[in-house]
Length: 145
Image (tube, rainbow, N blue to C red):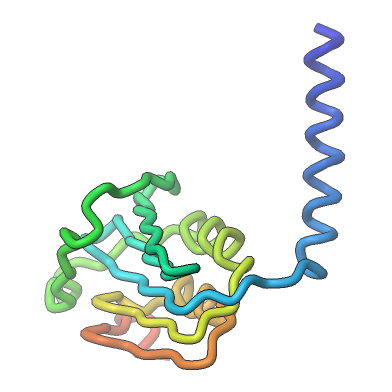
């Protein structure tokens, strides 16, 4: 039991140090970030870095999954948002922001997203030279303000 307590203490200290050092770390230059919403809960983050493409799928419960079929990402039709609001959790934007804050992107493309407050806060944390939006819709609550 003492060993587990020591490991937990060490893990906590390492986490605190990594949080402090994260803001001073040099960001890697990546070419492109594409964020696509495939249904009400799932998001795909495609990163082009060092002549390779990395794709992550983020589910509504905040878990990352690696995707095998990069070319099989289906776009989400934003018209469905008229009848049903998406459930974008703060967990998605927080975890994605931590992961992608290591990069400076030349292009950021947001495709088929429903833009709400969580997505806006995420977009403000991403550093890139050019931002493009395709087939995006806005959350009803955001439009009424």
